[in-house]
Length: 348
Image 1 (cartoon, rainbow, N blue to C red):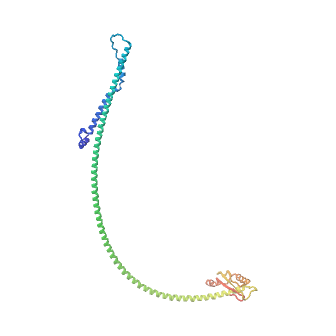
Image 2: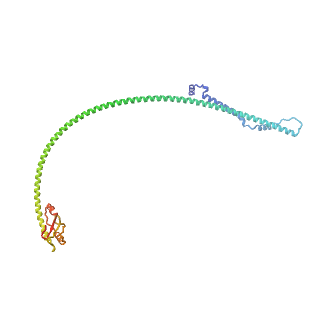
């Protein structure tokens, strides 16, 4: 109730017109109408008036009728029918009155219900208006809060932008200072580098001149050494040439000795055919092993006479071992492979 009174005070509505008071009054009105309709509608369950009329007639004791003269039977029947007709008319009248009363009661109930519904509608409308006003106030408050929040957000963003601007300016200043410092450092390093390069150039020039001097000395020494070596090589070459010549002379002398022995052996083993003439010559290529054994023999130039050629081949193959020098160089030079000519007058 306190909250509602405070709410009414804020809206300017009198207390007796508040939704709570209207709701209580409407509920009391609905309860009264319901009780009245229940009391009015209870006779609806009574039996029809015609039945009530019939029971009342049978339950009452008949009053003694005055002594009259007997009438005719048709008149009594007519009177009874008239009386019954009147009773039915009265019963119908009472029924119509009862139906009219019920219709009036129903109309009153419907009117009370309509009024109650109208009151409820007005109350709901008042509540809706109040809720609408409350929502409007809440929307206004929300808009105000939103505006305040947006203003605060703008202020915050502005402050952040200013802070960011200051930070960027400070960063730019530091970057410029760092750039200047690096430029100065670069200049110092460049000067130091040039100084070191100049010193290195001078040192390199000194070393180059020293190296050239040493190279010249070395070249002179090398030339002298080459001259000495050339003289020594020439002397050695001459000595080797003399030795080779002596060796060759010795090998030639020794080869001639063994060649003569081979020709002598082949002459002893060769038997030319009777058809041989002094103009026939057969040339054979002989290959020997270091042991003096025959490796192969090949006819390289025919005499034109098969019997003559075969006799020469047979003579070469007939020797089991050829006389060869034990010196390997002499053997490889003169006796590994050589040619020999067969002629009736000579072997060469």
